[in-house]
Length: 220
Image (cartoon, rainbow, N blue to C red; front, side, top):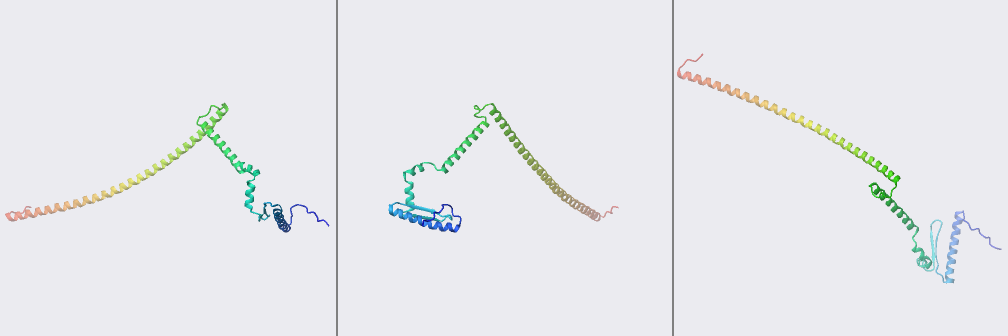
């Protein structure tokens, strides 16, 4: 009785697929072992399951077999060729260099340099570009000047208010000093009057004493 031929396709059932993977992996490693013994071959096998689990077999060393493979004459040419990542980096670098060169040329032309190779249409386009840039520069400059003027006006208003406060304070201090001077003058007048009255009374007393001494009659 012959064995039924199995159709080679992905096993849909997860459990059956795992069982088949385990059996066939062991069979593969067994065949590799037999081949290495029978034919004195150096063999290395690496297998990753669907779940990411790693299995390996080698009759010597996996690293040694891989190094020998890399040093084989067929594979030496692949190391001299740049990798795909390096080729992409080179392409990006070339594109960036081209963009830098274009922007540098545009900047020089905006400054009025390297204009000999431009035709009339390109010159007119450059002229419009410069005019638009100049308008934007002037608008920005005007806005900045207005902001500075507003700031100066605000500062001027603050200085005027501060000046008014200082004037009011000075007037208050001057008025207070005036009241003190008036009080001082009133006190001086009272002292002068008191002194004058005292002097008059002294003079009257001296006159009376003179009349009494001389025996003269008192004046009316």
